[in-house]
Image (cartoon, rainbow, N blue to C red; front, side, top):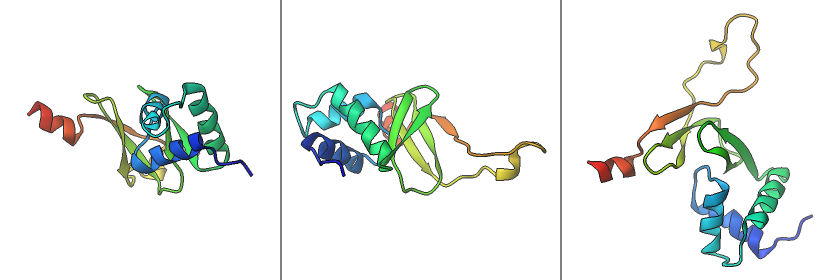
Length: 125
């Protein structure tokens, strides 16, 4: 059993407060509001531990690189806002698992949509 450090509890709190995929820089930014001494090495170390524990999972975003999100959610996809550069979860999946050609075995898939989120649309309107 790993001990619950102040830094790890702060990182977990960041993911509870922001119900969307987060990059390391975002985790560090929001985490420092809770624990001023939080540093990047500590964030990386704790993200790895939280993945190993099954609390987080890593997703590979085609534009933002590695993002992290909580596990335990139903299958979903992601939306990337080109204005604020944040990723959001999209509920559900419209892709049919039999969409692959004959002979292909689908093991998993990830879809990223790109555009402008509602907050940014309001700002630019």
